[in-house]
Image 1 (cartoon, one colour):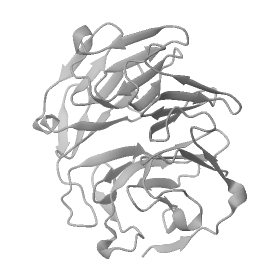
Image 2: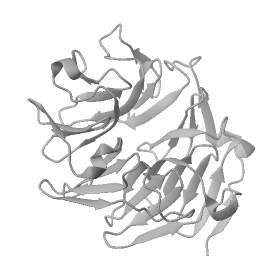
Image 3: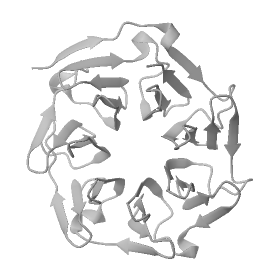
Image 4: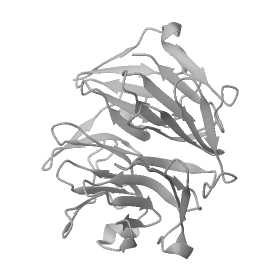
Length: 306
């Protein structure tokens, strides 16, 4: 049995950012934090970097492949990788831009997720699953689940690739063999295969967000979680899952705001206690422990101070 409560609203802990502050656009599709603790925002008007004082926006005029930026990653060499809706991949080394698209060998121009393994290979998901080894892109066509949209990718400490699809469930790839988990245990009916997010905790558990809720997978068994959203069965569309340094899960939802789960208690953050909107598209946590929430429907970004 899980308990639920709403966090007491404290306006001093919330800060709000929009185009008036320096964002490229108020529709936020991705938030990522680089090793220098700069915050990068992927928007529908370009990508914006915020260092705590200054805002810098990059668009197609600067070299970005497409202004609709859906995912962001950073490699060990300091390169920034931006995936876009229909424009392919942009690599930025701080000075120069390199564009990858179908013309230059990228299998598909619709990129929704990045993950970088320990060897520096860049894995990209979206209309296809592919890997860039620094020289060429390799397309992965099997197993059958990859015929579904490869929406999200995560890599565990053993370099195992986990792929969440748009209807084929969860896939595991060890570099040679594929394992398919087509039925995700969820609160509604235990059979949702449309995955929106994957987060991996320190114990190696996979926390999988789907269009029907939140589940965890320990490598053998699935556990479903009834979420406190005021609807029968706790069914809610999860848009993103992030795990903080204390092991708390921060779950962004499509229309129910943000839910924090400590393993026992749920805390709800939504419009009733300070968020500008309940459709949260992305979450990131900076080095100070502050949480950054992005909104799909043009409400910019909110920072929740730790």
